[in-house]
Length: 385
Image (cartoon, rainbow, N blue to C red):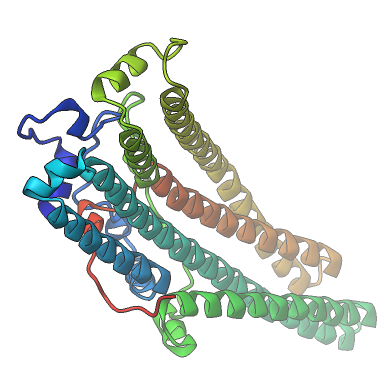
């Protein structure tokens, strides 16, 4: 099976056989990546560890692998039964149809693996986003409480009325509610990630540590506009269509003629529909990839503006705080400055997380997350229906 899959992927030459018995090729062959696990080189060891854990803990993925092995055994048994003279008696060999169907299942497994990696990575980005925002809000809460203490000292010194202290305590109460809500969201997101990776919540919390940083992930180089797509879902579709056409006894010559003249009205409807379906899927994939690249460029363009806004807000807070302590400023100015600074800091975190999530999705769109080895996955253990 491994040799057959490798040959199918590399487009190996095979012994000449009658046209009716040859495997069909509906699209140019695509070489499977030797190692498409983008998370290994993303620069975040915890991200890489969690994705690997998530793949290993996915029971559905393990069941897909088990069913793929079962189908291989069934196909091998069928080939043995039709060997030699028996095959000649029953007529056309069904091996091309079965081989294409088996490749479709193998590619579907590879795509499911890429999907799982994306799911875990996005969950991790969200956990880091909430963790960092929680850290910011907790720090700001401490600052608002300190403001209330300063206001009380100034009231006792006869510099301000009790309004400043009351306002400070009210603001601290509002921020405290925000902190509680953010902590609940962080706890829920962390619990979901722990379930995906088969970890306990305490183990995951320890692994996350106190340094709440959204991962900085760099996108890969964009594929050439005319480069074949390495998406396993498209390769699975190609294989399914090849199996269907082989079942319909379509020859490679008929398929090549239909590809050369897609509008020819004499082309069999099933063949024309198959080619249109594949073209539509590939066009949609390229459009999706281009759109995500454009979204990523837009996020990058916003980065410098948000950084400058955050720097200005930080300076404003420092000036307002110093003025209020010295008795020259009012509490409302200090509050507005600090609220603006918090909003700017959270905007930076959200932009960073949005960018990381976009790159994770882009890797999958461009065919990342699977490798040639995934076409013959290990059997593993799973509880399957």
